[in-house]
Amino acid sequence: MLQVITNIASESETALQYVTNSGLLQDLLQDLSCDDVLIQLNAAEMLTNLAMCQHGLMYLTQQGIVGRMESTMVEAESDPLQDFLLPGDIMFVFCLLVVLYMYNVC
Picture: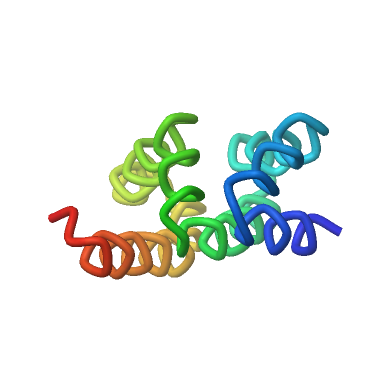
């Protein structure tokens, strides 16, 4: 269900606003902080889809998700379980760079 929500939210700013107001996207954002590494990896993958559009990337930046992904990558050096999150984090950062390049932000 959360995959459908991110797909809808990535369609337009209006759709993102509706999904945000419903509170369903907040559940996905909270999954990034859960203790289960597999849930975190799944959430990172779904949020990558949202980060592929400009309004989604702006939303994730405002919510502190981009910074949280960076922290996860840094923590991977000290926490062996965080190593499982690296593929999802790297994909997220790659998509972030693609979006920034597409919109000539960087």
